[in-house]
Length: 266
Image (cartoon, rainbow, N blue to C red; front, side):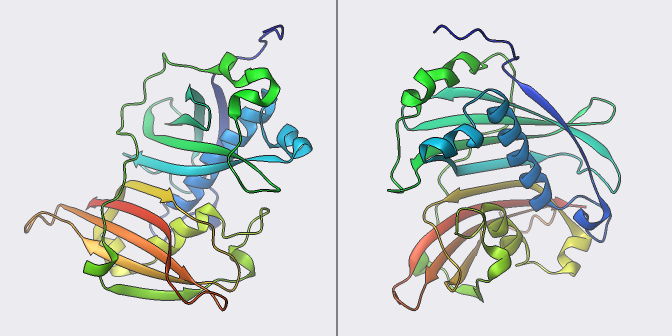
């Protein structure tokens, strides 16, 4: 390729845990950490000219397919923290991107792994990533930085064996720039399945989410929750979650999201 690389393969971005992004324990909410990971991905790809700024001109966009976050210590109110991000693999229709979260002292406090697809905004169909900018993204693949957490995997949950625990409507504030329910909103809605008394005893250790289909304003979202914790172990709790949607035009339930959540005793 003729283009000279002037930027490092990985990018590092600074954030702060603002009070309205933190919970009653002064810890940063997982939804906001996830959102800033996506912001870091956006900054990183735009700086290297394969991000949304360029893609919008050719009617393409990145779509998050899967995300896994594992955290050892969540930033607290007013804490400054850094997110480093890099692409560690590219295939024709998917790319994998990793994240490292460090505190103000440079200590790693969390990691993330994600999988992205590129779609045509007119047809909503997958598009060839390697055909964009003559495969420019390949110049920035970074395989040397470790990301010591498991990749997101398929969440095994059967709607026929699991009872729904909540049904919600979707509104204006759920919808993003692409016209469908924002990926981070699903995280927030899922974590609302547990009340304050639960979060007084447990903290979030690992979160996984896989996006299966889009949902839109006016859809009803139904949440199925399966407790997969082992025995009487109160120090660790594990759950699988399935979200389906129905609409005024389609009463049949359609799978939208699968998620896995791991809590540990606080």
